[in-house]
Amino acid sequence: MILSDKRILEEIEKGHIIIEPFYRENLGTNSYDVHLGKHLATYKSRVLDAKAHNEIDHFEIPKEGFVLQPNTLYLGVTVEYTETHKHVPFLEGKSSTGRLGIDIHATAGKGDVGFCNTWTLEISCAQPVRIYAGMPIGQLIYFVVEGEIETLYNTKGNAKYNNPTTRPVESMMWKNQF
Image (cartoon, rainbow, N blue to C red; front, side, top):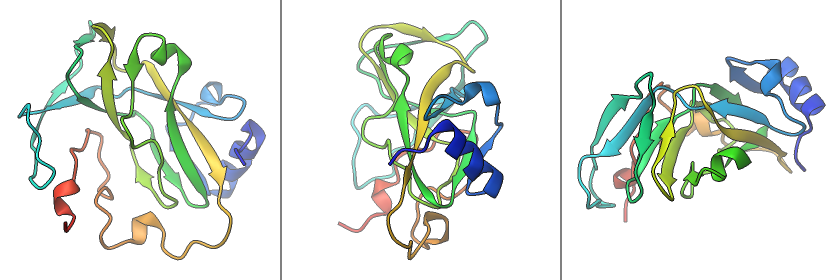
């Protein structure tokens, strides 16, 4: 079950959902719009290795915008910091973003109960497109969890994306044992 706008507001009031900054006008019928932060990153190498720490170069989106290029993975970040203590958050692209040929996540659209951070975006595009810091980029949808949670994400010792940040975070796959 997806939370409605009224239910999202109730859960914010209870402290079960935190969105900072929160602006009422960004609340949709059953979602909350999030915005692109000013920081982007790209991997230093064109060949990535799942067992290695692939380093990234950070840069800021200039005031005049930045043109994304096809065949390049960009890591972005949301302006909004969120916490979700009782629900499963899903980040999806906005239809207006998709209609520009922009994908905001390759596979990581679901957050875990207990996720407390900004959202790193895995941005790619179908053709060159100019983007801007602060533009609407996606929407958060909240699902009800059935049953008790044994371990919240923010209490897991092996959680790889727990450190609060305002910049995109590279893959931490290399920390897994395989």
